[in-house]
Amino acid sequence: MAQTFDVPTEGNHVLEKLVERINEDVELKTYWRASNITAIERLGFNDHGPIHIKIVTRTALKMLRLLMVDGEVPDIVKSYNMKNDDAEVVVVLAAALHDIGHAVHRENHEEFSISLAPEVIKRLLKGLYPEQSVIIVMVEVLHAMISHRSDIIPLTLEAGVVRVADALDMEKGRARIPFRSGSVNIHSVSALAIDKVRVMKGEERPIRVEIQMNNSAGIYQIDELLRDKIQKSNLKDKITVVVLVPKEETSIIQELKF
Image 1 (cartoon, helix red, strand yellow):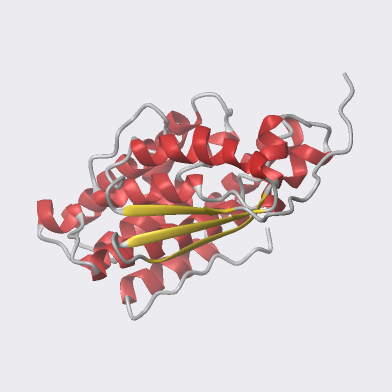
Image 2 (cartoon, one colour; image 1 turned 180 degrees about the vertical axis):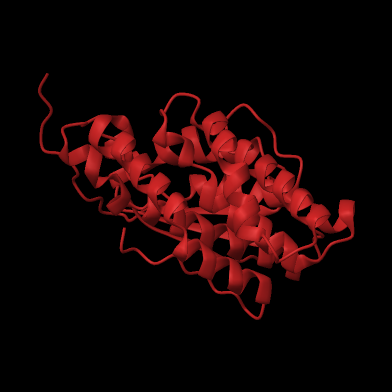
């Protein structure tokens, strides 16, 4: 619970105030804690609490900014004549709230998340926008949240970056919890094969994602999970994924008995 929620606000004053409010919000921080109780303690999964939230938020915000620098127009700007700064608020709120439904249950957590979120969103935005704009931001946040579900296609740029950023939280330190708890399977082994994920400005496409692996088992994470998230987003033509595997691979397990 001591984990500080911080993102580079880069002069976005509404975002600065939002980040302050998130750090002071007992309800939201309790949802994050309860989500980890479900994910880690009851199911033996990896973290879905404040560290995951911070990683996803910072990645999503970085991707959005790279796209905007490249000339992409966020949908809250296109549809409602709002500003790029408001798109950043949508992405940060959606990333902060997308997994709170784990506090209820892992199954259908996306639906539980959007059920719990509206009152939190309205409280966090109170006084930062006129009432009508609060509702607009809220529905855009809810769309981005539900769009991280595997079978839902994002309809906005903001939703697309949240969906992909969620899938990019895959560095090996994030997989150690289920591995140490005895979940030695293709999911945990392949996740441990990924050393580093870097998001940067691309050349042919606006975003370049470099994934450094220590063992080719990590291809499972890329091919079965990340590829699907990107292909079923609206960003598949905006992202280049480069996977780097060393010539000499690291051993992850010595033997497997069952």
